Length: 237
Image 1 (cartoon, helix red, strand yellow):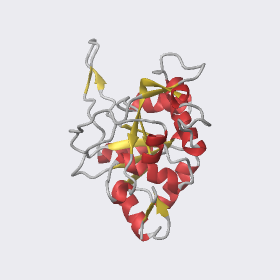
Image 2 (tube, rainbow, N blue to C red):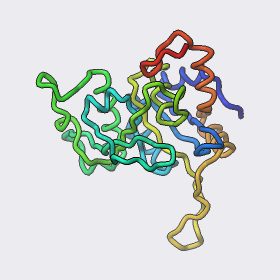
Image 3 (tube, rainbow, N blue to C red):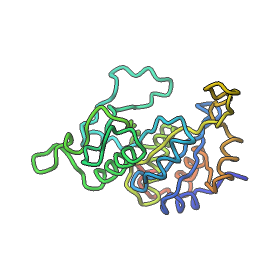
């Protein structure tokens, strides 16, 4: 199985499917399961949680973070890749319980996507954000750089870029794929459950019928194929 071209990847994202996106071997060297937030369902969230690290994040634009008053988690970011975590959230909805279930996390992701479309803010004529989300919660929004993968080759920016290219609300859902590992005899332990790398991601994609692409390929696509479009508010020409 080879990496998939971006035109077909955009089609799959647009259809509401998962894709697998790899970053550089010189960076995290990890593959993330990515989907548009508006298409996240309870069943898809359960799949993501089952085969990933479980730390589900939702890349959003800087403007949405400001609109929803989602401040950065820390004032001094010492993460090696400067991943821009905001405060965590749960959807403030009658069906939300603790916020951690697949149902609750999927609902929170869809609520973020809906806010990106409706432009919900704290303005007097809009619904206050604390009525839409409660914080802290169990989904971690990540603030993408405005110029996308053209300036930061991370999964955060890739998710937002891909959603925009597919005509979706610019909110994604991402989580790092991990090896399933094996049971350690009769002990309550799993061994060999490291991060899924390039070949593992390709095998995972083949197993589940998912398309696999790279952030480098996305960047090249934006530079050479979409020179007149705006991605994350930035002119790619």
